[in-house]
Structures are given as structure tokens and as C-alpha cells.
Length: 490
Image (cartoon, rainbow, N blue to C red; front, side, top):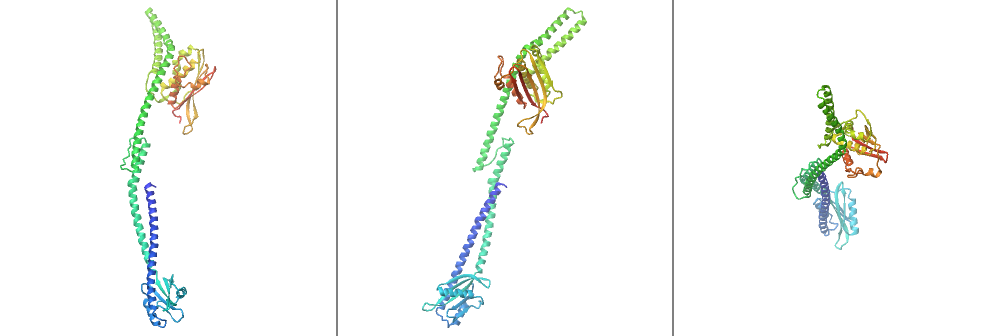
């Protein structure tokens, strides 16, 4: 139920109660006024009769009867009873018959107490008001009494008419008030609130340009102005946050690019040897061709070797340039095992130089993950280089990839399919204090380290909705486990 409708109902109820109370009090007041007016008229008639009867004795019964008959029917007088205490005379109007005993008793009570008596009752189902008073002789002694029976039905008719007038008045006032309240609440309450609700809904949908047009100086207009100002402030805050997010994103990209270059620096010595070997072979073969121009079969063989070594150099350089090249992040399905194999190719020289054995457990037909291939390769390069640096005198590097169903807090359905990539080494390991700080910026245990590699690695993993876990023991090695959600993992 709308607020305007509720307000109208409450106001209507209050008006009905107030007017009903006023009408009830008005009816009581009218009844009291009519009763008072009637009693005044009856008493006036009684005083007139009392004055006339003071000059008549019981022996003048004919005159007394005529007077009673003449007064009957005067101003709704139903009848008159004249009674003398000595029993010499008892007269009643012709309109009265049997059943006047209660009114005779009222006359006798008036004679005994020496003062008028009043009573409401009914005579033959006709509502009446009975007024009895004593008759005195010339010496002031009570010798009898008179009772005037006056009809009261006219009062009920008047009160009934007054009720209907009050009912009609209440209906007109309530209908008029309801109409005015409905128009007023619709104009000044319902419509402004509807506009405010539309503004709130637009705001909840992200439309921060919506403005509420409410004119006036009331509280709802001021609320609309405050809402409009809030929407403008939110829009400015949103634009500021977007700018700050873009700036932060650009800084992160630059940081990751810098870390790439640092990684390339670590690869440089190994790659120099990797490229130098085929270059020496190419030089030697070219020299043989120059000295043995007449040996066509030998020239062909040497040219094949030169082409093979050139393709090898080209492949190494393309991998390196593809990794270093700065480009916007991509989001596409990726084969994690293929990226791991490519990363191992880049580090092949360093692996052989340090006499490290590589054990691979890469499951076939694994589902793809969604992400940027360049960024994922940077993650695997950082983790494998760290593992190799912890085994300067040789050891075992274990790589594995498998899909798992994992329950994680915050997921709507409680479970999700993830790709688990493990990078395990048999190197020096880390202490607990080092493990707690390895993802902090600029924290490093190496003389030539930047302290940014694992921080950048963790940032990339989190950008791909994943996470990284670390376990390590001193002199036993370390295990880094990386988790990425699968493309069809929901």
C-alpha cells in the first residue's frame, strides 16, 4: 500500500472519529435542549392551571372538567389529571382512559412532599413526560394535585432528523477531505517519492547521470537536491577511481615489463652460449665451403647444417623477443603444458650447465585455462629460475600439471575446477621467516635480485583469479603450487 493511500486512510479515520464524536455530542446537546424546552412549556402550562384552579373549589367540578378538557391537546399535551386528596373529586381528560394509576401515585407523592414531581414513561406505548404539582387552598394547604401528561415522540423525530443531517454532513466532509488529501498527497508526496524511487533505481543500475527534477522548498525537494548532489559526487568519484585504476594498471604493466627485462638479464649469459655454439658451427662450415668449392656433395651437407643452426638461433631469438615485447594482456584459452615446455626450452642451457635433472608429470588432454600467454610464461620463468638458483650444484626439478576440484571460500556453489601446477626443487630451501616475506616488494635473499619477481608473479596469478601456495624446508627444497581456474570449471 502506498504512503499516500495510508495517509489518506489514517486522516479519513481521524476525521470520521472526530466528526462522529462531535455529532454524538451535538445529538446529546439537542436532546437536552428539546427536553429543557419541553419541560419549560409543561411547567408554564402547569403554572397557568395552578393559577386558574386556585379560585375554584372542588364543588365546581364542571368548571374544572371543562378546564382540563380545554387544556388537553394544547401543545402536544396528551391529557390532564386533577385529583383532590379528600376524595371529593378526581377528573381526567377524555383522551385518557385506564392505566393512569402511576400518574395518580405521582400526584399523591407531590402532595405529600409539597413540591412538583417529574417522570418519563409511556402511556399505552406512547412516550410521555409527566409533570405533577400540588394544589393549594387560600390558606396555603395542599388539598390536591394536577398531573400533565405531555407527548415526547416529537423529540425523537427531531433527534432523528438531526442524526441524518449530521450523517450527511460527516459524509460530505469526509468525502471532501479524502478528495483533497488524495490530490494533495499525489501532488506533494506520491509523485515526488516516485521520482525519488526512479532516481534510486537508476543509481542502483549505475546510471549516475540521472537527475531528479523537483521544484519547491519542502523537505522532499531538498532531499532531491541532496540526491542529485550525491549522484554528481559519485560520478566524479567513479571517474577518479577509473583514472586511478588505469594509472595503477599501467604502473603494474611497467613493473612487470621491468621484471621481464630483469629476467632476460639473467637469461643473457646462458643464451649467449646457446647462440654462440651454432654460430661457431656456422662459421666453421662456411669456412669449409670456401676452401672446398669443388666438393659439391660436401657443400650441400655443410649448407644443410648451416640452415639447421640458423633455424635454431631464429627460434631462440623469437622466443626471447616474444617474451620481452610489451603488449596488452590477452584473455584466451591456453595450453599450460605447452607454455611450460616453451619455458624449459628457454632455460635449457642453464639447466644443463647446472647439471639439473628435470622430471615432468604433465597430464595429457588437460582442459585449457583462460589468460595471457606472455604473463603465464613470466610466472613459470620466475618460478623455474628461482628453483634453478636454489640448486647451483645440481639437483632435481619436478614439474607437474593436473586438474582438481577444490572447495574455496567465496564460491557460490562451493566448488570449482582448477589447474594445479607444481614447481618443486631439491635446493637449499627457505626458513619460515623468509617464506612469510618472499611476496613482499623488494624483499630478496640474493645479491643481484630485485625483490620484485615473486611479487609480480603473485599479482599475475591473482589477476587470473588464482592463488599460489609455498612449502619449504631448509636443505630439503621448496614446492610452489599455482592454481588457475579452468575454462569450463564452473
